[in-house]
Length: 93
Image 1 (cartoon, one colour):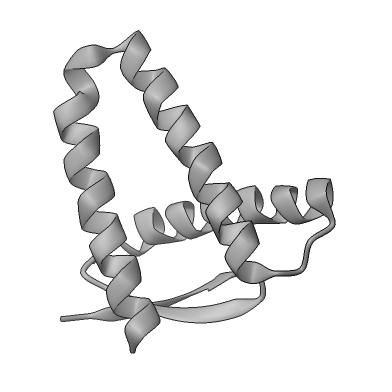
Image 2: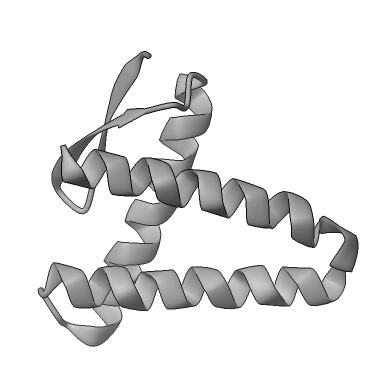
């Protein structure tokens, strides 16, 4: 399986399972921008706290989007689970 390297909040991560490099970069840029906004807003440098606050913000966007389009819930949920699994795998290696 092909591995792609991305940078999020100044750290390099090898991500496998997303073969579309442009899409992966788009995801990484989004996460990076969300995390940098949390750092800027809160002033915290604790990366775990930043990651949790970012996850809460993304979850908020997700649930807001579901209210606007309930039929998209299953598709989005599958993508979130798949991405979550890939992130966990990348962080454990």
